[in-house]
Length: 413
Image (tube, rainbow, N blue to C red; front, side, top):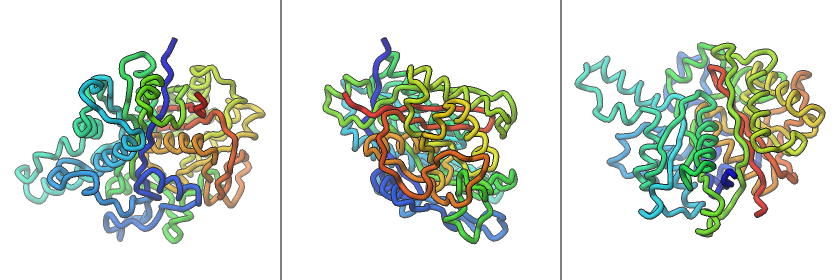
C-alpha cells in the first residue's frame, strides 16, 4: 500500500507578497500584482507591464557574499523555501538528512544572469564572463542551493518542463515519498524571467497582453476581452512529508496530496489541440490515481493564463472530465493577480490550493467582467468565496504539450 503524503509547509514569494500569509491575504482581497516594468527600460517594447515581486530584499534570506553566485530565481527559491521550512517547523538534523530531498523546477533558470553575462562578453570579451555564470543560471541550482543551505541529502533534482515544471516537481516528489525513496521533499518552482529577452521573446510570439494603459486589468482569465498573459515572477515551495513522519515530529498538517497525473499532447510546440485531449487525460489520470470520482472535486485552480486559446480549451477540458458537474465546480485563476510564473506557476498555485483547503475559502478570478460564451463555468468572479471543499485540483500546462494536474484533499486525520 502506497504511503500517505501530506503538506506541512507552504512558502510563497509573488507579485502580491513576499511571504506565504501576505501573499494569501492579498489574493483573498483581489489585489493585482501587475504594474509597469521597473526591471529594465521598456521604451522600445510593445509590452511594458509585468507582475514583478515588490520589496524583495535578498539580504533577509541570503548572505551578501553569496548573492553573486545566484540568479534571481535562486534567490526567490531560497526565500520561499525558508518560509515553507519555517511553517513546517522542519529541522534537518544529520539523523534524517538522507531522507530529505529537494526538487525545484524552473522554465528557464537564470535569464537575468544569461543576459548580463552575454553583455559582458560582447563588451569586454570572454575574460569578462563571471566564474559564477554557469552555477548562477542553470535550472537545477535552485535545488542545489536549497539542499546545501539546509543540509538535505536525499533525492535532489529539477524539472524543466515549461509552465508545468513545478507541478511536475511537486508530483514527482509526491511519488518519491509514496514509494519510500524519501520521507520529506522540499518541492516546487521558481522563475525570474522579467528581462528584456524574456518579455521580448513572449511578446514576439504575441502571447502577452498589451494592455499597458491599465496594467492591473491586463490579466483577465476567461474574460471575453482577454488578450494574452502577463509575465510574473517569484516562487512556490511546498514541504511534503510521509504522514507518520510528520505526525511523529508534531508537524502542522495543512492538507494531503493524493493524486498526480501527467500527459503529452504530441500536437504542437505552443498550442493545445482543439479537443483539449492532453489536459483531459492529465485530469483523468490524476483522479484515477487517487480513486476519486469527478463529482467529489469541489474546486479547481485553473492554469487560466488569460490567453484566448488556453482559457477556452481548459474550459472545454473541464467539461469533458467533469460532465454536468463542471458547472457546479468553482474554478479560479490566481494568475489574474500574480501573473504567470511560467515554470514557477505550478508550485505557487499548489501552495494556494493547500491554503484554500486549510482555510476553506476560494481565491477569486479578478478582472472577470465580460462573459465569454465559450468560457461559461463558475470562475469565482472578482471576490473570494467561503466554501466547503474536500478535494481540490491544480492544473498546469506547458509549451511542448506537457501537462500536469495535482489533487489535494482536506486533511482530517
